[in-house]
Length: 345
Image (cartoon, rainbow, N blue to C red; front, side):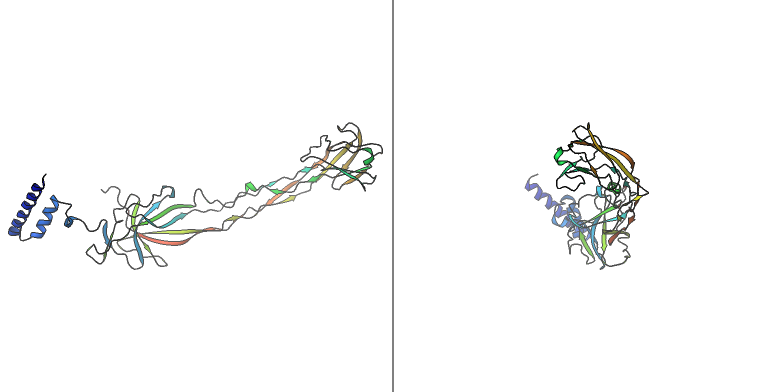
């Protein structure tokens, strides 16, 4: 359409408006209504509020804002028309405190850690040569070192030991904190910048984030005082949310003590060669080191052991008791408009 045709069309509309004034006595209403149908981009045809004019909240409230409530894993980002996150909180706390039963590793009889050769007959030195057994020794023949005859007058044989009662740490927890969160509900409030003085009523405020909100959001206001609010009629639904969690849940330490008697005794033999073939002496050791003289003129090169008594006993467990609790803190009340009916357009 040419510019001349547009100007001609507008002139025709103005002529019609004058006719309307003559016939109906209402030039402005007739002109704006008729002209906006044909020319919706005209300034007088634009809504001064790009969102919605809504009642200004009472003094004890702040907002409004768009509030999303649901599972945290599903929470969307703030929408473009309300891009500023102003609150995040939770509800529906399920923070049980459960501790697995305390368990203990059973004690074990452990064979001698070795022998020490002495140059004197009564294990008094002056020369000493240690023959240490390997860790976890099962008593089979070992040859840690060789002691020549001039260095051997006696041997000190170490007794077997009993491993202590120890907790199995992996079987004690510090409370079931939930996966991934002890909260069942997450909430995020988002706000846009209000536009003042465009609604034609001092009791109304233009909010770009007003209803209808994006899916999952609703229009809400935040209560600023202590206690429970009486929600205004424009925002009738009340929601209690919490800003944090005070968590003192724990389990008492697991402790293990011997239960009943225990007894460990072993026969330890020393040999002149390095393959436990030429026997020198055998000693029964229980709970204290023993000194065993060795015949002169012989060296020493190996040793072996065998259990005579292998009764380590058992352990009694205690502890692993749940203590403390988790409780929500920093409560906040939101008053919201009802969620939109999904069946409504």
